[in-house]
Length: 364
Image (tube, rainbow, N blue to C red; front, side, top):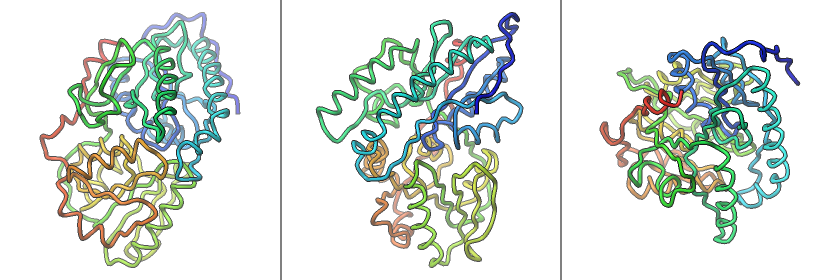
């Protein structure tokens, strides 16, 4: 539904007006924008939010006082375990959505007198009259075919150059946390490494749960994983909480006496729950891994089938003994619990747990 925007074009902005636009592809893109939005407000900027679907609903829940607008949806679904097929089928829709979000971004900029845009992986969210930043950890795409990978990265390089600068949520020194995804030959002349970008904070919390399961990502894989995990965890004598990653409404119920279910939690609520859990089960999305750096928890990672970025990150971390990894098809939670204590997790001082605020301050 198109939202009417009051025309403020005749009113000169008294403060920077920043549009923050995360991609709705799982919840990782929006969650890592939360600390940036908080800091933008502290620095005196007027912040506007834009996304679609579950990401937009989470933004509204976290920042009910900020104006929020709907952007065109990419409608990403992972129906198979083959990324080329999944993306190939949706490519015309994705390209149309990028063009449509560019048109909508231009409309928002004109009506709201936006002065700067921070886009998290939305390649259409830029204009010629604003300062445009792209937030991403994927400077080098991984595709299970060398020719297609070369083509994908050629197109990516062209898309990156639409933005004034690229902010990477990782350490500059290789391999960092993202490894080859964000290090190597720079595809853009202005790349700045922010450091860890997580909405989580570490503090002491008494253990209440054995397992916290955090679900996210594109359908139908989110639902398939939920069904597999619930079926197995009900049979285990472990107190479990499942955060389902469904932000359209807040529901709370019990699948069994020891299995608590909640549709979603705000950042503060989730922070407490995860710290109050002995082990965490989640996807191997990059934002989830950054959260685990801060939380210092041991975890079972389950890559989204066909999402090569998650498979790469999970493999790197498993080979170094940091986390345990299982694929979705052969998931065995009981076996995983027996092996989790053999993993290391991240040491307290392995990575800095805050990002470089001076980069945001200087840009603003």
